[in-house]
Amino acid sequence: MSNYSYQDLYQFSHSVFIKMGCSEADATQACETLLSADLRGIDSHGVARLKGYVRLWEKGRINATPNIKVTYETPSTAVVDGDAGLGLVVAPFAMRVAITKAKNVGTGWVSVKNSNHYGIAGFHSLLAAQNDMIGISMTNASPLVSPTFSKERLLGTNPIAIAIPAGNEPPFVGDFATTTAANGKLEILQRKGEPVPKGWVQDKDGMDTTNAFGVKEGGALRPLGGSRLHGSHKGYIMGSVVDIFSAVLSGANYGPWAPPFVSFMDPVSDPVGEGLGHFFGAMRVDAFRPATEFKEHMDNWIQRFRNSTPVDPEQPVLIPGDPEREMEKIRMEQGIPLLQPVFEDLKEIGKKFGIEF
Image 1 (cartoon, rainbow, N blue to C red):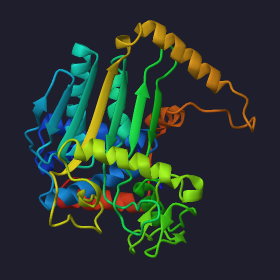
Image 2: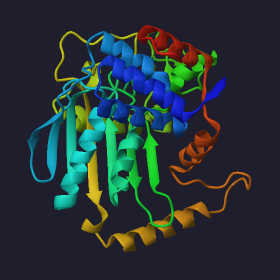
Image 3: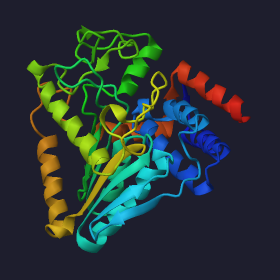
């Protein structure tokens, strides 16, 4: 495993997006969104996914020059049509629509249809936090997850991210899949040749398995909780809410009709909507109480939780967003590590487009 600088990976990815036909502005936005995952240590959603975006573009499922537009709106809500564009570009556009509405009327809520995989959910929610707003970001995804008690794959990993600004403290950033693990983590274990922990995956018969290829072989990811005894029905509910807010509300494909990002699945022949769906919210803090006052209390909240008595003195209590923030500092200085299979994928992409990696 070797480390590569953020700048080098950015330049390579930018060149790839330009070769795909993206505008300079869209290629820049796509790189910022994509590489935020690598910087924050969420390797499953960074440059490791570049091959997937290229594959979908080659199949005509990604429009490199989309006309992203608002198709319906009220003072506080909107529906955005992504025109089959890169979700890495469509999603920031939609969140900025939500932010603008929040600036005008206090809150903004935007659902998106006709989009694609949008990277890490936390990137988009942080756009709102940078404007003294609470940001909410969610998306539906490839149908790889079985509801509690089911053998069928009907839901995606359907992440939720909430970013909350603070004063002197960094923002609270909760970014999580509604499954026991994101599919990208499975892909990392597949590349490493390692098993998955119990409770992550069920086989084609619905039984627990540690086979990292279990989903590819007809099984499914499990909702957050892993089993009914450990609360998987709650993960199932959360994933369902994300699916409904992101897709049923916007007119995108939902449930098993969601167009897959993974290479081992093909889109269904009878879609019920347009593309993949997202949902964004931006709430101006001062629509509830003075922003300075709120952020002082957020600092107090964070400090109290951070200073709570740990079980193990060697492992202090963390605030959501802490690990990713620390990782970003490290990787900006020391570079971003790439597994050998990811390195080979990038070399292959470079050869395809005539770009040296």
